[in-house]
Structure formats: C-alpha cells, structure tokens
Image (cartoon, rainbow, N blue to C red; front, side):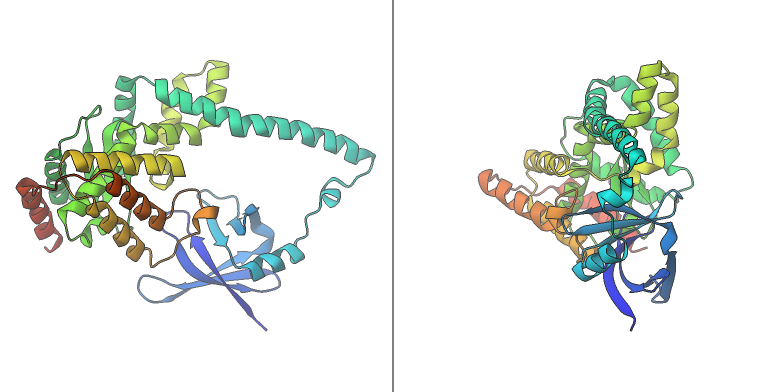
Length: 360
C-alpha cells in the first residue's frame, strides 16, 4: 500500500512554497505536484541524502543533499512525523555509544554545545549591534553595490520602474536613505528591501492590485525595513559567523566582498516576528501621515493570502507572523489611532499609469 502525505516544498530558488504530495517508498520519497502549466512534476529524494534540518513543535523540516541552495520539505502531518521517528530512531545512547570512547565523545559534545550556544546567542547580538552602528554613508555605498549585484541578469520592466518611483515620490516620507525601486519581471509574488534604500518589486505582486492604497501599503512596508535598518541587520545576522571571524583576525577588507557575493540571499531572507510587526506599524504611520486608508494594508495581506493559495504555516511554528495575525495587528492599530482619510489625486494618476502598463 502506497502512503501519501501532504507537505510544503521549497525548491531553493523561490521563496514561495509549493503544496505537494509525498509518496513514501522503502528507499526513496517521491515529491509530486502540478507545475504552473498544469503538468504533473515528480522529484525523487534518495533517503540516504536527506538531512534533518528541524524537528520541534509539530514541524519536521528536511533538506536534500549538500548543494546550495538546498531543496526543503516542511511537514506538519503527524502521521508522517510518527513514521519518520520510527524509521529513524535517534537516541542519545545510540549516538554516543556509551563506552570508554563515549565518555570522550560526551566531553567533546559538551564543548561543542558551549561553542554552539555562543554562536547562536552571542553572534546574532554582535551582528545586530554591528548593523546598528554601521556608518550610514558606507551602508548606502555598499547597498548600491548589492543592488546592482541582485539585479544582474534580471529582466527589468523599465516603464513600470519609472511609474512606481513616481508613485513612491508622491508619498510624504522623512527619508534617511535615497529610495530607489526597480520592478522585475517574474511570476514570483515577492518584494524585498536592500540595505541603503534599494527596493525590488516583482511584477507578479503588482498585477493583481486594484487600488493605489494597496501599492502605498506595500512600498511603505518595504521602505520601513530600509529606514529601520532591518535589511542590513538581517544580512549581518545571516553572515554573522564570517563577520565575527573577520573582526577577530582583523580582515575587514573582505567583509564587503562576502556581502556582495551573498547579495542574492537577500531575496530569500525572512524577518522575525518583531521586525515584521515593527515594519508593518512603521508603514501604517506612513499611511497615516499621508491620510491614506490603512485598509490598503489589509487588502494587500488579503491579496498575498490569495496568491499563496491559502498555504500557511501555523504562527506558533513559524519564524514570522502569518498574514491573519498581521491583518489583526493592522485592525487593532487602526482602532486605536483613527485619522481622516483624504483622496490623493497624484497617487491615482500614477497608479492609473501603472495600471495601463500592466494591461499592455
């Protein structure tokens, strides 16, 4: 009898998960789903190359092979997790083989745990502080290089890029960074901020927008990540190990190079709950300052829910708030800080220009 389980699949290139079926066989798992053209796609994972990434709070994350970027399965099906635990028992005694050699192994393990704890808790704190005191002029200069590196090879929509920057310039925002927005042609629903002021918007997220308030909410949110230095902080945290070693050995010359080499990781970096909520709230203040309805942010999140086909990981086992929680946060914020909504003809003009570009 062939057993089939539901899971979320990440191909390593797109941040958007794919809802898939996992077929359990003796030596392999077969992952199957319908691709964008409606064709059945099958991917085979040899079990000996599967690496357990995380198993806690009802979530099992598995990665395949040692190739970067790695494919990943996120599984919350408890029947699969139970069968996985039975098939791959992992006890402390079995791992260490508690013999004389096991005592030595235990000591080494404890030492590694101390080093690991320092890495997990100390390095992120150092990285966060480093991002905070990072000179703004150098952050902007480095951000421009990262921006150019990320856009290399991308198909840029020039007319939409002009229109979206004109739209953004109508918003009254106290900017510490020179904001620059580029629209990239892609079927991935995504937008992300770069250190120093750059914002990349994939046109898939624009195509289904039906109001200037939605677009204002998106840009206010993404620029908030820039203004609050979240993009810089996130990149520093991701590369904290390298940066830490560079500081220890005095090799600061290589820091900029490794950041640029890893620039493409920016599109896949996710923010934790606190940073995402902070950016939402800062974006809401921008909407308020421009007398734009915060319903635009709710409509944006509803659009993202629709685009994700309802596939979401429960907030309790996720690294960032789910869209329902973010909608609730906007509603609570709005109820505490009501303000007058005023029509903005300039935003309507440039949004309509964008709309005409979408339909060309």
